[in-house]
Amino acid sequence: MAEAMATIEGMHCEGCEQRVEKRLSTLDGVRSVDADHEAGTAKVRFVTGQEDIEAIQQAIEDLGFAFEGIEDS
Image 1 (cartoon, rainbow, N blue to C red):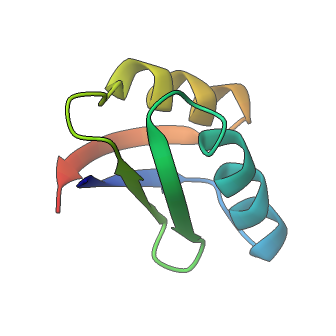
Image 2: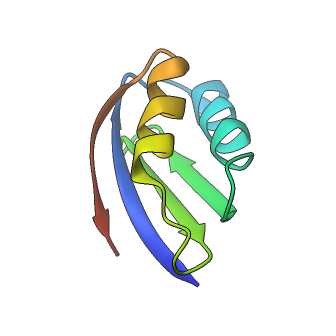
């Protein structure tokens, strides 16, 4: 299983975290998501080889947050 850390701008509360976690968890290949509004990040764990960064970015932006980037963790 692979991990990546997405940087997200605009999460201000636990409700924001829950929205991000719920939405990203529905993406193909994603196994779990841990969002942190204070750090402005979401750790995404997914099946190796099924990383779809564009889908992650689109899902974050669809929620009204700004996707700042992603890096392997």
